[in-house]
Image (cartoon, rainbow, N blue to C red; front, side, top):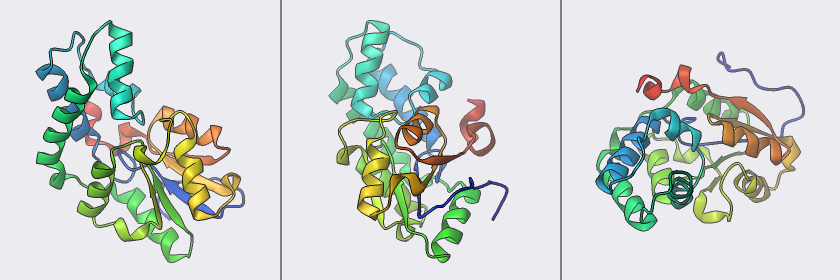
Length: 205
């Protein structure tokens, strides 16, 4: 294994977040959101810090929460469509976070079942796994479309454990966001934190 330390305890399966954990998509997501908010005349300054505070939240939910927080009236459908258009144009350029992907490969080779549990749009998540060449590592992929509640709710992780047929308390989650870590803990799962300051090229934005 590389420098990322796995937690102690009996483990039957591993669940990975996608954006910012397996792939360094967060800078692209940030640019796509910034483009969409500016195009639609958002009242707030969309900073990297504000962006990362919402990591793991579904796209429409993000707009709804910002509308409430900043007393704005953005059309969530339009903002999300503009975001998706920008993201799709640049998606093929995403890169792996190699230390995490290498751990996934090693765990797969050791016979552990692996899943992805992301709050992202299914097109984004499946596209990222495809462009990064790691889609075959995961028996299960859970996206925002598969659950009712976004992180920090545990729905995505619990759904992944259910589909893998594994006790949630015997799962370990890899996550880069604080909301994702809260979701893992709410699911009764141990976790490995993927620090954006170390692993994302967007930390300096």
